[in-house]
Image (cartoon, rainbow, N blue to C red):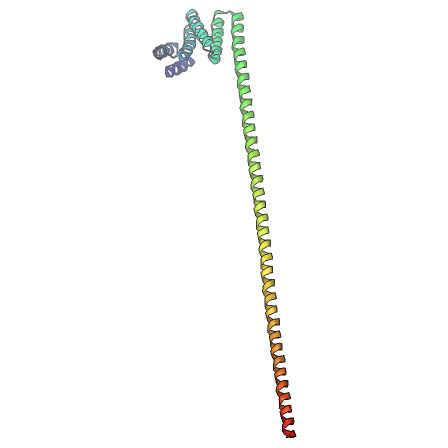
Length: 219
């Protein structure tokens, strides 16, 4: 049904109402078969234009009346604005300028409302997008700060472990140096003790030898 409506629109633009009305008859049949009230509303709007091109203002007005009633019932503001615009064309054909002005104003009011609502929606979407991006930026910033903090803590831990390792190394090295020094001192002391013992032993032996010689002389 929507394809037939689109084809009819092309022929209405080309000022070929008979072909357009033939397509609209098919569209109307399709919409009725599937219960497509929205599509049917659009078809009545196009039928209004098609019959207007054939100067059948009464028939055109009947179709537009039906379209307006359906659009109001289903709150289809865009279709209602289109119907009011075509209604203005009907009255223009009839030379009723006051009615033309009236329905053009109705169309303009609806489109202004739709534009305002769309603008509000766009602004709301932009605000939502901004808030989302701002939140994402804050999260990214927090994550970056967390990573930086973790890296700093990790660096601090590495530095602490390195210092502890250095202290342990110095302690072990100091103990090793001290131990070697003690071993050297002990070896030197043992050598001195041995030397003193050797001297005492030699002195004893020499004393005994002198005593023995003295005894031999006395004899």
